[in-house]
Amino acid sequence: MSKATFRQRVRYAFDNTMAKGTRALVGWLAVVAAVVILLFSLVVLLAGIAPEYAEGGKAGFLRQIFNTFVHTLDSGAIGGDAGGWVFLVLMVLVTVVGLFIVSALIGVIATGLDNKLQDLRKGRSFVVETGHTLILGWSGSIFAVLNELAIANESLRKPVIVVLADRDRVEMEDAIRDKCALGKTRVVCRTGSPIDLADLALVNPRAARSIIVLSSVSEDPDAGVIKTILALVHGPDRRPEPYHIVAEIQRASNLEAARLVGGDEAVLIEKAETIARLVVQASRQSGISLVYTELLDFGGDEIYFREDPAWVGRSFGEALFAYESCTVMGVKSDGAARLNPPADLRIGAGDQLIAIAEDDSVLAAAAPFTGRVDESAIVTAPAVLPEPQRFLILGWNSRSAAVIRELDNYAAPGSEVLVVADSAGVDGAVEAQAPTLANLTASFRAASTTDRRGLDSIGVGSFGHVIVMCYSDELGQQEADARTLVTLLHLRDIASKAGARFSIVSEILDDRNRELAQVTRVDDVIVSEKVISLMLAQISENRDLAPVLADLFDADGSEIYLKEAERYIEPGRETTFATVIEAARRRGEVAIGYRRAAAAADAAAGFGVRLNLPKSTPITAEPGDRVILLAED
Image (cartoon, rainbow, N blue to C red):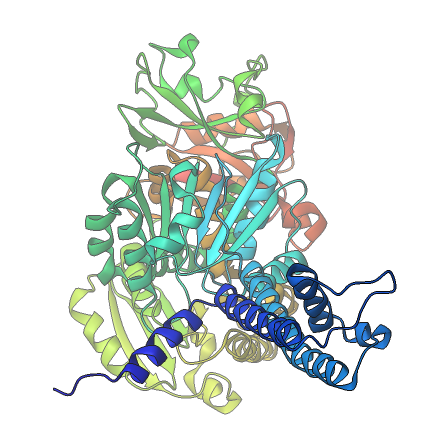
């Protein structure tokens, strides 16, 4: 191997110092300026060409150094010079060299300041906050999450939310400012990768109250979520206490890996299955998405827990009438939550009542119910046996297979489902579901869901329930919603002209398109991103809600139903909500609200949905009214 020459070694050392940035550049300019000043000063002194002062005598060494330094930095200093031509020429040369040095220095300083401003723009300083909510990642659901957390934080003194995402800090702040109403909540943004340990340390996860991990838009979003949880839970700088992590997982196949990584510190929301369950429940009963939205957002009534010694030893059926303005819906015992348990279940010491209330402080100070039940207004109606039904699914995405499986859990034996889509590979995906179905027979037909002739050829009117899934796997958010809206317009026109009666449930990606979808008089609109956002926000504030929400969305156990009010109380007769609760209790159900058909189209009235009515609220059952219940079927 050839040895490096002296020149190469000097050049290598020089390059290494230059690579150190602005400070190195300023240092080299200072060295050059010092050499120039010393050299010219020596020439002037040794040649003796410096002019004499008016008071006599010439400049000494230090004074000449100072004079040369002034000429180097200030081009105007030469105007006051006197002396011979040789001295003046030397000073002109010093000034010209100084111009180059000063110009280079200004350029270096300006570049350094610009780089520093860029670093500040990126947000690379350490977050000193404590007790903050930390959001890792960026997706379309972040705005709904921030809005909900801002409402939940209204009772806090100085609430702070910290966001770390691989995006420009200023862009994040501008987008949040445009789309969120934060009130007194302060949002701090930092640019960086949530899977990078150095970037993660910037947002101080050790001091965070809760951590929300969002799945980004990529080919494999779950991989980023799992890596982020891994960096938090198993990182070298993790805190001794357990984290409170809430994360969304897109695909069921990645759920087990995420559980292994997160352990007991992470609550995982399986997005596809959750949305599928809500879509299926909404397809069977109109308005259920409104109930879930009302229950999950922080703007109205939410689910809380209360340990009430006054009810120890008494039955759950009696506890349904514990409070005037709070609705008991279950019991948490030994860490396990049970919604709508048997009415004779005894409440033990340490058990907590699960109730819907305006706020946890309202539940803690809730007044007891002192009214009475109107026994004569209760109606005894026979149970309705399920019958085989026909379902039509228009469109396809990664959640559609879960919708078919979930339909099978609810459908009566002998039911059918037809999938119509124009995406490649859907026929194979539908066939793959067939062996797993017990109550459904599934079939596929290739056709465009936005083509009117194709829809007419299907015979939409022969189906009892139509589910419109968006093409979110292959189209952008707005384009997918646009195709969904076109399909809905065709469906409503078909129903209007043929006089057919079938329910329509639609999946929408962007909440801003909900109102457009409602123009088509669709029975229910499921905004998938918003539902997941609400769940993330709720569980980040209260970890105990995770099993409660899982039970609500699961086909096993009790779910939310909207059933005809006339099956519980006598139509046209005024009674109270307490009577409705008693009528439901006798059927092994829990009444948690009421929907008035007369206000079903009134957005200002919550589309007729009211949860957690005071027990003494007057109720008169009108045609189309529904009781909102927790029931097993």
